[in-house]
Length: 94
Image (tube, rainbow, N blue to C red; front, top):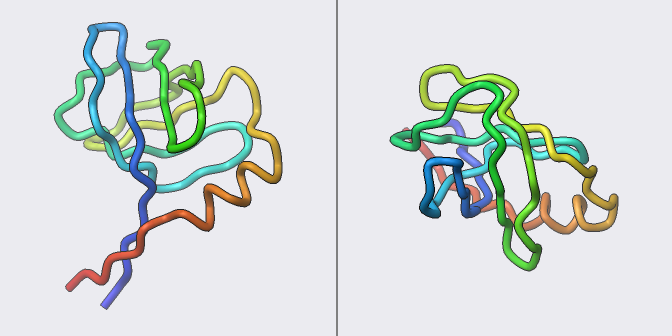
């Protein structure tokens, strides 16, 4: 049985509206999100908001099936990244 970990976030796309997404992987310079049902394309500029932070301007680097890779315009501060990585929810999966 594998565990699934994610960090809940909000995503604002150029098409409008704010949607809930799950961040599956996070680094100083970007993240991998599960973007199911949210239309976005490579090159889109979006805003991503994690708990306790303002919206972070980001660019969509790639989209594949239900996932997307994002690059932040400004890197996350190291201690902020460490804190966020401790906030991931872990769920057991079958």
